[in-house]
Length: 99
Image (cartoon, rainbow, N blue to C red; front, side, top):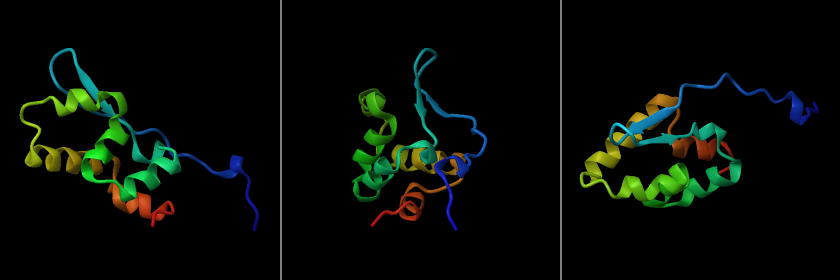
């Protein structure tokens, strides 16, 4: 069986996952399936801090500056993120060719 790149379908876009820091600042977390596969591979081997940096990019410093950004916050945030998009990042990276 042979397929072309054009044969590969993307599902409909999911509503974005956003974290509101205040009334004016929102950090958008992309659908992990929309990340380039090389970023997914980076996520597989990256420590948690680097995973967040890869996911939110330039917004990382704003997120890290939050005074309550402790382990409980991080765990709750990542759980909500994974639930929203319907896949845990580690599992997604593994199915995308992670080591």
